[in-house]
Length: 381
Image (cartoon, rainbow, N blue to C red; front, side):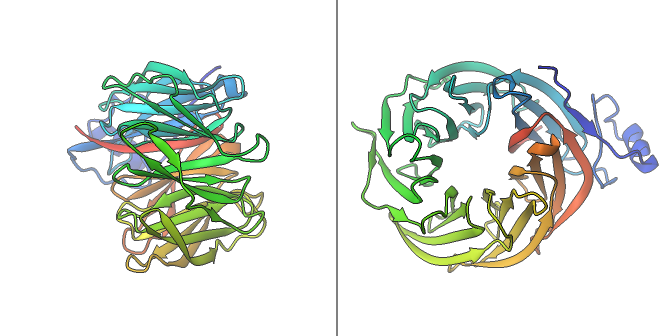
């Protein structure tokens, strides 16, 4: 596939002057966001963008570095990857795990990540057994995929070099075409795993063990209202609360988590009509929660304030986006939020007010073919 990732940069005299005077003039495809401020920093951002291309088999992962203050951006590399719909960074922050979500090539891939540039080099691949892996998660010892088309959860291991072993354990949740696991999320200590099944309207709980079998499906299951379509689940930083965004109803479900047992404490509207919830994420300080909504004419990021004591949410705002915001990512310092607008072939950027949680559009974007996933990390210079 012809790669046409490039940076859309505002043609502003101030930005040009800043570009010529900050020592960034040698950066290929460098640009700035709204800020013309320059500041020395001891770290830089790395962003990885998973793109589908014209067909899933022609997908790729784009690597970029960004300056944390000026947001000057450099495209540093591209690797081919069949439908890289989800990624997870290993505990060493040097190994990347990627789903290849095609029925013909249902695999997990591992890559070595260069923290200075974000460039990737393939380490290994392994078949997931279940078709259509749509989500990957790791606790440092095990790597798990949620296999949407196959109705299953797969578990494997990777060694110290990031080499993936063949899938050791494969749990069939339900019948193919009925069960559709869509996400999997480890507790912070890695001893438990929650998964959402969009087709069965369930949240599943698994125990993770260091002996055989390493994964067991528990009886602690939550059934949501029929037709909700729970898509993605996340946990608060202290694991006390779980948040689920639904695909088929415009809602977020909030649960109290007590050692793997979930108790519903809130259902809150995303203030959108129709369906097609996308992604859900907490700010890194845990004070705000964001979801994306993908519905023609109502595409948006919805912001909520989090009561860290009770876990409950309060609606804050709705920020319109481009078409089909399938995924988004928050910068590690909570300064920015980036949105993968699949049907615009564009990644757009927003300033994030760390006090109010509000989003403000920036005059900055990265154009790449049908982006579906963003990973945003920070590394020391």
